[in-house]
Image 1 (cartoon, rainbow, N blue to C red):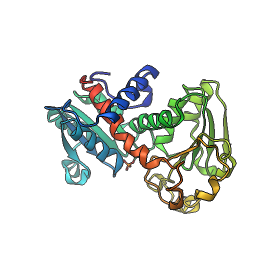
Image 2: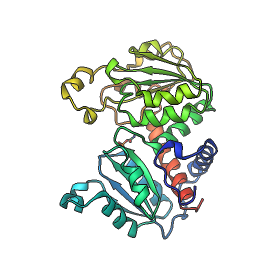
Image 3: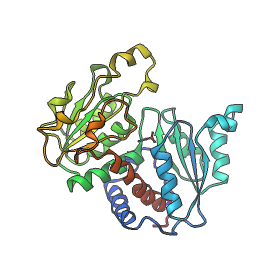
Image 4: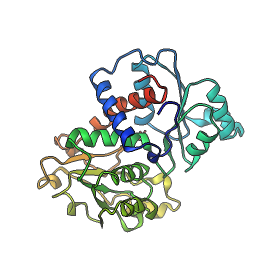
Amino acid sequence: MKNRSLVSINDFSIGEYFKILDLAEKFEEKPNQRILEGKVVALCFFEPSTRTRLSFESAINRLGGRVIGFSDAGSTSVKKGESLKDTIMTVANYSDLIVMRHPVEGSARYASEVSPVPIINAGDGANQHPTQCLLDLYSIRKTQGKLDKLDVAFVGDLKYGRTVHSLVIALAQFNCRFHLVSPEELKLPSSVKRYIKDANLEYRQYTDVTDVIPFADIVYMTRIQRERFADQLEYERVKNYYNLKNEMLANSKANLRILHPMPRVKEISNDVDNNPKAYYFQQALNGVYVRQALVTSILGLE
Ligand code: CP
């Protein structure tokens, strides 16, 4: 993985996923070390973020590295018309690795092609979010003891949810059964379903979340992504489609865990938070250990 960019979850092999997850377990045991001393990581966020940006920052700080960057491109020379290429070439002068989130699909791939330092895609539009995928895999393995042959339900905005796209592509390599729960307008794109079909795996589509709760091992809730809709009236029609309540989990399996990449809006009620099956805050914490593993591996310091 040394000096390689991570743009799509397809950029890593199954063996490399496991290397990252195993290393993340070690960082979970001992998160404060001086491994990144002398290294500078740039966090370039052209879109809002809480978890991804701050967990990268926490991960790097805990390992003794330094962080530069921006969380609002409006405060950079992009505002004066600077191109993405020139921004990346300049930031690469000041850093050993660039973590980038951008609203345009394909922007991280383009950045990786022009950058002299590795690029980690922290989300490019509605396309992919591979580091979230790695922490989702870590969370699933930690709670289920395995990644294969699970019944995984994805619920919400499967059309625009980049975390869903990356995780479906990854889990298609682990013989899982896919339960795709969405409004008609927000079904999983056929370009992502292709990975399930190519692996000769089953998927079923639903609109009602209660249909999947009795047998799911993982329920992966997602927010309806207002910022991706071209037509705001269409967003208004579907925005309150899902609202998972604690009482709805009464007949669920003992091993069920509710995941959510967050932020949530209204799709999970607060009364679910105290249910031991709610795992989304722990999932966000796991992001620190997984990102420690990823950064040290790409910098060749693991
Ligand atoms: N999961 C995720 O990407 O969250 P943020 O948008 O807060 O980074």
